Image 1: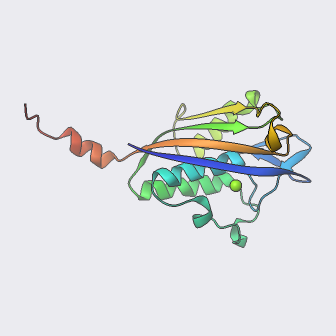
Image 2 (image 1 turned 180 degrees about the vertical axis):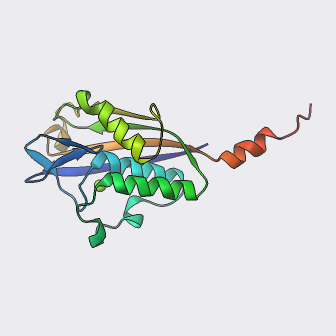
Image 3 (image 1 turned 30 degrees about the vertical axis):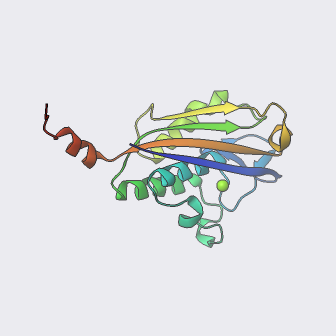
Length: 170
Ligand code: MG
């Protein structure tokens, strides 16, 4: 088993669409960023790359690259899933926490989970998304932006097979 952690934060900006986990919100503010600034999906990409020992999102999809301007982060996630699989890993599960005061996420969490699972070619129940407020503390507490954390577990199917074939010695 291998584990990876991901963290991302983006600030709110007027005139941008708010997109979290591929869900487009009807909200007066969006997040500032080079891509669609989907902070939830970025944290998940970083956790996947970390678990695979494949660096980070900035290395694979630099924000100086015009090809990634305004791109849907679900496409970046799909490509990240490809990088992880090329290295021989299988995604076991991911758990995410989104830290924000507003908007309320409870109603759209199932849709966010389904978007993330679909982009990675995973069945239902592999990705869990939670929301937490920052209890009005600091910049997140003042509603200046949104942060997200992700933890991912991977396994190497080949290695598990090898272990299973070890002869019993006692
Ligand atoms: Mg980001």
